Length: 249
Image (cartoon, rainbow, N blue to C red; front, side):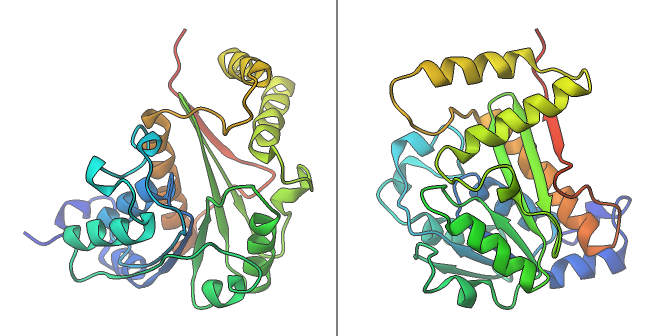
């Protein structure tokens, strides 16, 4: 049997070929490391992986790395892992942090981008703006423990920075935006509100805690969105979003 034979009742040969030819850009491969493997196994074979960080032990609970990867560049070890899965894939990596001096060069030549850059500066906003100028849709995935969240920035459409132009604590502001939205539509997530409240009370201002569960949930959401974009199917664009929660209490 061929590599994608078991896709056949869900994906036509024409769609599979479109997927194969689509060029994906991963800006940051923390949670992006799980999304990249899901996309590769689905049939996306052209990827650029960009991340200047090295693997830490604390990444192993929800990112696609092993103990033997600790201390090595995420982009490099992920690229090697993906090529073991599909040696014929066209996967390149850059062990760089994305900044003002290289962002345009990195973005050029891609069809869909995944933005999982850390909000330690306004670079994630700049990344989105340049993608919009180059008519590249941008996926923003988030891991909220028992829930996955995905919003997609349409080229020429609303930018995610409209939630807040302040990059510090932006992940928390996204969560609060979703809580307000869901509360308005009587779809409250009390457990998430509780996590946010407890997080605010913590002395350390680290990233929101994450679980392996949501990494795999959001990977599936991202690949489904990529498939829909490539094939001209309906997509919810920001400020609309996708959220899946498996929390049952």
